[in-house]
Image (tube, rainbow, N blue to C red; front, side, top):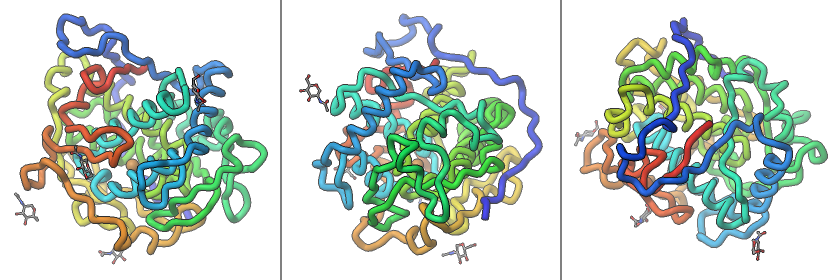
Length: 365
Ligand SMILES: *[C@@H]1O[C@H](CO)[C@@H](O)[C@H](O)[C@H]1NC(C)=O
Ligand SMILES: *[C@@H]1O[C@H](CO)[C@@H](O)[C@H](O)[C@H]1NC(C)=O
Ligand SMILES: *[C@@H]1O[C@H](CO)[C@@H](O)[C@H](O)[C@H]1NC(C)=O
Ligand SMILES: *[C@@H]1O[C@H](CO)[C@@H](O)[C@H](O)[C@H]1NC(C)=O
Ligand SMILES: [Cu+2]
């Protein structure tokens, strides 16, 4: 069974990809003078690709030490943080900020723990929308899952022998990396969909568009583990997918004449409205008619890697996530603190709005 897609008529303008590289250093007061350059996976040299995969394997083989639920390796610890926070990290205003900081933690840990000298690559999914099954990025990460268990090939992938300890969902179980690729689900990462999101005027409109369309495309297009809203970082493609989304947000923020405003613009609900994983996370009521059907993500579905609906019910040993520093309100503010459980220090949203600020220092090419 495939997730239903949100097909909408798209009146996208040409895909604009402004970068922040031309911004004069004089207009900034940050300490970021030598940003890391994050590149698209397909542009990396074979040596760069190998270095990234080796670093990820190193994280997977390095014991964790943060005492997080179910986590054996440093890699598992990232997954554990996502499990803890998943209820307040999707379908909410901090969706983009949370994943930005989370990706930064991943990049930083690859570099600090595994001697990686490269940066976090991204999957330029606009090139593969509608054809994930033949994507070279997918192939480099082990391809589709096989047979009914949907495990990636143990021999065709450097990750084929990895045993994950967390997931599916909140469950703790030993399992392989599972995929169930769906080309139709990957369609909403197309250049037209991305351009449509980039053309949105407000953060609320941009966020709703980008979380529902390109975001859903990567998760639904890879499927299985990646489709699980709680445990999806068990698939190493998660990080390349979310870097792609972070780039889209950074591109939106950096648009000509909008940058000063958009580096301060946040909003949205702190709790997914009528949160129900089975039914799909809901978004705020559409303000610009973005969501046919009232702003609902594609319905979730069961199966290998995704797990059973019960795996998405938070068990007693996972504390209810709390929103920190939000003044008791329901609206996402710049003062909200994102909780990272030790993979990187907690930060406020304000501190990570600028990818070339005092906490973050990178750019996309
Ligand atoms: C990183 O480099 C240091 C210094 O060369 C070395 O001691 C350490 O074993 C390396 N760590 C990994 C995970 O390769
Ligand atoms: C969640 O959504 C499913 C599917 O629409 C529905 O059957 C279930 O009753 C919902 N659960 C809650 C708690 O609303
Ligand atoms: C937040 O939302 C809840 C549920 O709708 C409501 O009861 C509460 O009054 C709201 N709090 C604030 C500060 O607006
Ligand atoms: C960071 O977040 C965690 C998880 O909620 C919390 O326990 C911790 O106190 C926070 N740390 C700081 C310094 O705010
Ligand atoms: Cu997530």
